[in-house]
Each structure stands twice: as C-alpha cells, then as structure tokens.
Length: 82
Image (cartoon, rainbow, N blue to C red; front, side):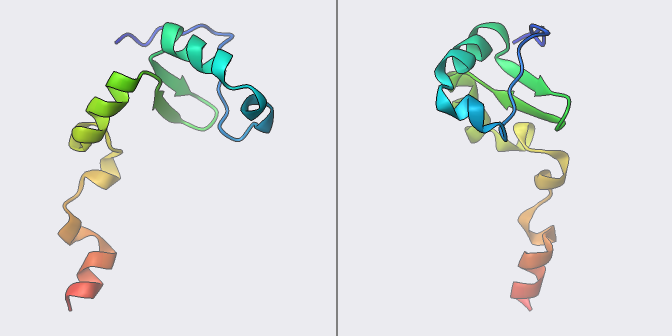
C-alpha cells in the first residue's frame, strides 16, 4: 500500500453532504488512497475491505499508540480489579 493520494481527494467524516451519496468518494478512496490520511483531523482510514479485515485481526499494529497498552494498564480495568 502506498501513501500517494490525489490532492483533490478529501474525506471528512463530519460532512453530512458526503453521506447523501458516499459511494463515488469511497470508490475513489479505494482506487487512489487505500490508506487515506486526513490532515485536518489527523487520522488515517483504510478504504479496502481486505486491509480493514487485516487491521481488525492485527490491532496491535494498527491501533493508535495509546491503545496498544495492555488492558491491565487501562484506568478502568485497574479500578475494577480492586
């Protein structure tokens, strides 16, 4: 997967206009940016099913750094163990 993406390709998950007909944009993302980066909101999105599926089964590599800690180090887990 490469990080090259068209400069005119833009996905905003908060833009309700996109939700009216998202399929053309999603197709462009699959074709042009399988790993899409949104600079405004600082997130990455996988746009191909196989990549998403692999990411879900290998969450230690694809999760944000803060989510990679072991569950026992999460504050909610510590308070429930007491």
